[in-house]
Image (cartoon, rainbow, N blue to C red; front, side):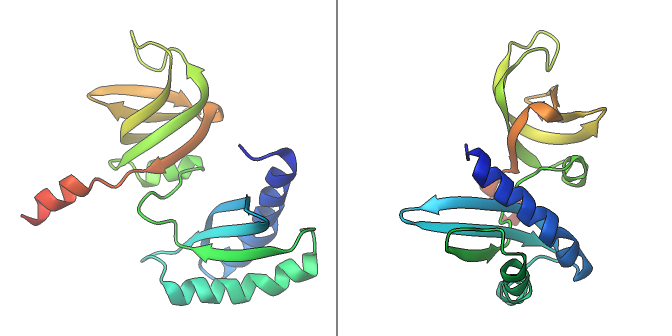
Length: 171
């Protein structure tokens, strides 16, 4: 888990860049600020209707690089990376859970959460099919049982691509 300084850089980056990217038709899905060896990396995951290609990543990089230079809130030298969210797209906002309802996902809580489904023991991880977002909780169907995980208890959530199901559809 990143420290406080890393979180504030990621959040400030989100606050500064989200409206700029939205104006140009992009969604800022995720921001990561991480150290890789002796180098720092600011990684932006962007999306748009129809998906993101390499040209989009280059365009976003050219768009945000001068903004980050002018804002100048990141102390150490860093590498800027722009990427699509990929098949395992992170899910953060309540709308994400509704948008991807019906798709397979993994949800991880900060710690064990009790009472997510009748008779279910406390657990920290759920993998199943997203039902959606209702009343402050993410609903996920795990083996026919719908669990309600409070949104504020979720540390990470992402889509899980089902390669086997995709292969079965192509046969």
